[in-house]
Length: 307
Image 1 (tube, helix red, strand yellow):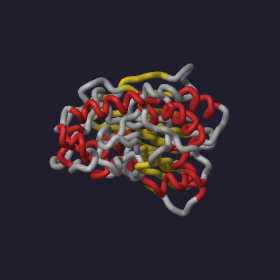
Image 2 (cartoon, one colour; image 1 turned 180 degrees about the horizontal axis):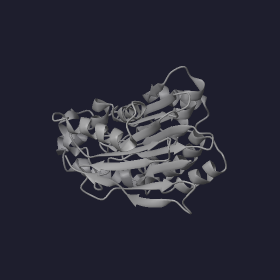
Image 3 (spheres, one colour; image 1 turned 90 degrees about the vertical axis):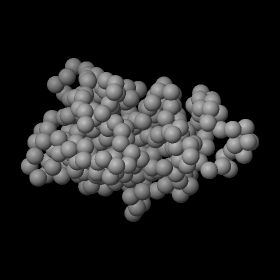
Image 4 (cartoon, rainbow, N blue to C red; image 1 turned 60 degrees about the vertical axis):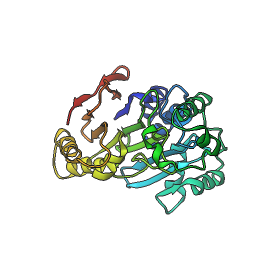
């Protein structure tokens, strides 16, 4: 068994470890932990603690993938819903579809018995409006949100510069290799924006025959490069985990137009190896690791790469 997750997984990582030790199916074990992350207001990039879109609405995304069956469930831009990873699991379980978005995803959540959450953390609401006040004239403030939003794209940031996701990758006791993601997406994003977190092949991918990968930070890049799937495909073609990740990094580095930003790649293979690399990150990036050979989960530093 093995479990890795990004640093923001701290509220729920130990819970997932305990579930894996008990023999729990990997996706269920990871969702137990991610649910804790989604509820934690101190995690400012996921669930309740995350940041709203440009018009002050929370839209959360998530994805799950069973690497044994390669079944996938995804939800995007979901309003009024904090446990979106659990909702993505229900898409995988109950529907012939892979992805639901927006109002349709929320309708499905109602059918599944999910409560409607007040998903906007009060401090996030305060910071969101104070940031927009710096950009809007009094006339624009009076008309907001019925103004052109695209000119405000440079406000897609926040005081902590968080563009993160929580990603969990696990190989469970049954030999299944699986992936789960959850995020509130970029702060101040254009309404309806989806990053890579709910996109299979871009933000996550799992195949119990080979391994799994998931990404955080600039999802626009990994959607263009198909980063997570590239890593698993590299493993299938006989590359080592190091070589597969290097191949995906090289592909991302070839992007020269469009929005270019930081990227963090997390990956595991079926032999118990793992690798986490941070590309173009200006601050130290850490991640969580557990396997049965460790007495307790370890908080390690990722490899740092530059363009």
